[in-house]
Image 1 (cartoon, rainbow, N blue to C red):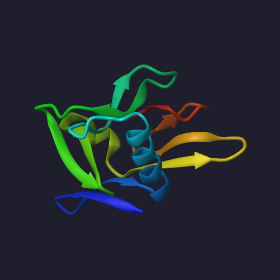
Image 2: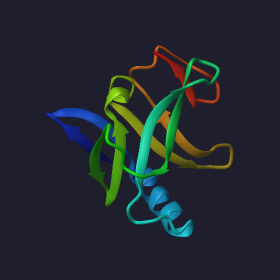
Image 3: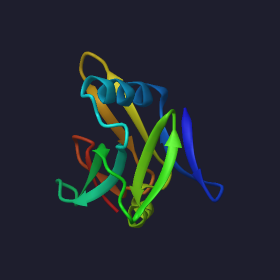
Image 4: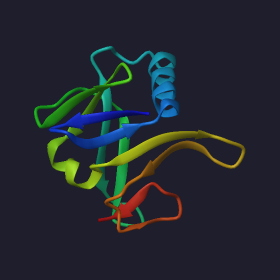
Length: 117
């Protein structure tokens, strides 16, 4: 697993499976090389916040990291919700998709894509 670090604090972990899948998506969808992977949160979802994971242009409020050959973008204000989170990729018979393991979540929904802090 590769970990993004800022000031010696574990910010975010992307598993090898997540890194591989993100590279595959970037190639298959012919994503512009200037785009990075945006990791964040937005209001909504059944528990209060939903995760954001997608390709985007860098914005002024972003912290920028490099992990596994990918540029990772995170709005500075979102770090309090995402500090220490692990993103993985599951490709099984029952589950397929990105998963989020967030130590800051007080409560999560059944689908695993929303949480409360």
